[in-house]
Image (cartoon, rainbow, N blue to C red; front, top):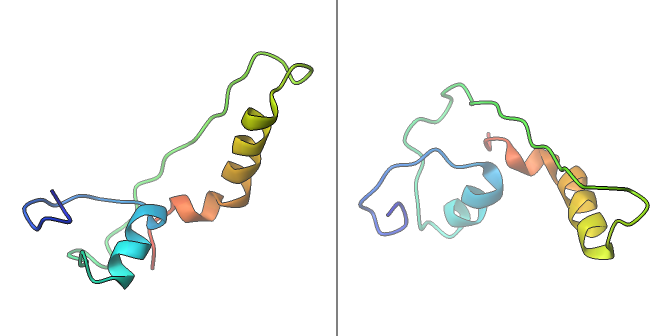
Length: 71
């Protein structure tokens, strides 16, 4: 809806950064306080952690700043 110009949303930088750069969306409330949230990765055991799950957790840690609102 946002990309089609018929909706408004609060999006994390990870999602809106590329869309802003391509001018597919625009900022409406630049400078508004960011909402905070916590991301948890839950898994049964480190001992039997699949490579896919390990890679996903590593990606979350590496890109955690991408989940905040862009300035």
